[in-house]
Image (tube, rainbow, N blue to C red; front, side, top):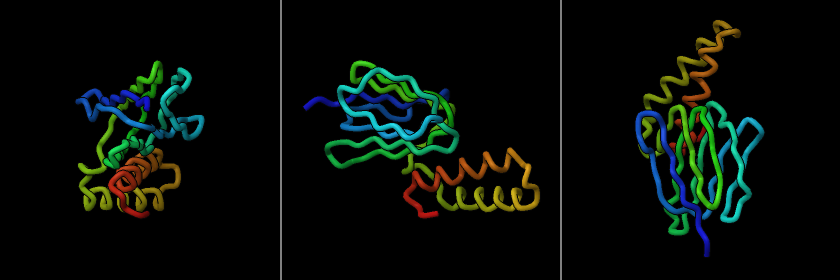
Length: 133
């Protein structure tokens, strides 16, 4: 059975690379699922999205991805994220604290765009870590 070659990178480091059966990412046009044989595509990733890489061995990868691009061509999937963090690397207590601070800032000032972005990012980190919101 064909597989995808997947690479997830940010400016700081290579987050992960390997083979996968499916990749699911959230773009500005909606959620996209990529399987072997997918047509070429270039998508813009949303802020506060969660990337899922499904592997045949059951060792699925989940990462919080904040902005960037996803490119698909010839069973190669490249995720070029502005920032990204594997779910297994998330400090859950710190992410929960960041989400609470951001929500308090939003309650105090509904127009606080920075707090809204911080809340999206913290929520994505928690979802990637497997936490229920």
